[in-house]
Length: 305
Image 1: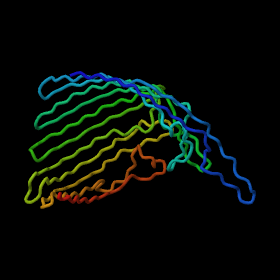
Image 2 (image 1 turned 45 degrees about the horizontal axis):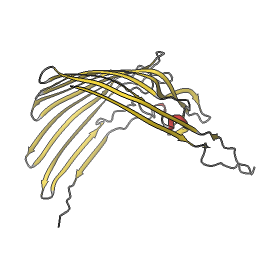
Image 3 (image 1 turned 30 degrees about the vertical axis):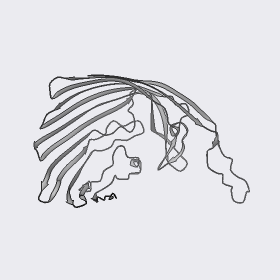
Image 4 (image 1 turned 180 degrees about the horizontal axis):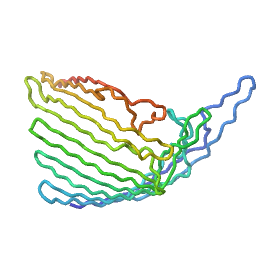
């Protein structure tokens, strides 16, 4: 099976001249207002072509092979072009000279799906011209906030993903996946905000009909993040962590329909950790601890006359 596609896009960004602040503040006792910084008008036109070519080949009834080549582009956003101010706990500066980024991507994957076992393995390589990214710097504001700037560089992002699900018996399944991601600039420096490599595991028991309960399930799983030892300049390493999750749910049939009950617990053992993608990492703020969610979904219907 072959697939082929092309697309052309037009985009115009028009930002009028304006003051950098919403209003000025007069200094008490001086009777004068601070001079406002004027941001000049910004007008940009972006037009570009995207395309892809792929194929899928059925080696057997259950085993297939896929490959794809693609090229696309992304225009900078208004924030990336013009931002100059505090954003949450960091100070971000845009770049008015940003160009569209263009990528050239290749991926290949194999898939085996049978009645009791499913396995997917995929790898990809993405070369990006003028890749736009937000990077921490060594500069800080007068208040001590780290300045993040939007930069542009040729870069490559590549990785792989493996997924497996085993249906031991019709009611019991085990599944897991592994993801690996790397990102580097053309000069060899690592890209910022590249996620940690991860493994996710889950075991689940499902019964369509248990006593007076329908679609009863109970599950337990874990999320494992490995050490991130490939930080970008001005980033720091991030330690790995493992968190555990569990949950159960069922529905009860009533005259008005099914009532669905679910209880989900994440980070069951209240693990203290900081993810590499956390925007609060530099402040030392931990990611969320134990969280328990109880959900009850009640059906309702409108009677027709």
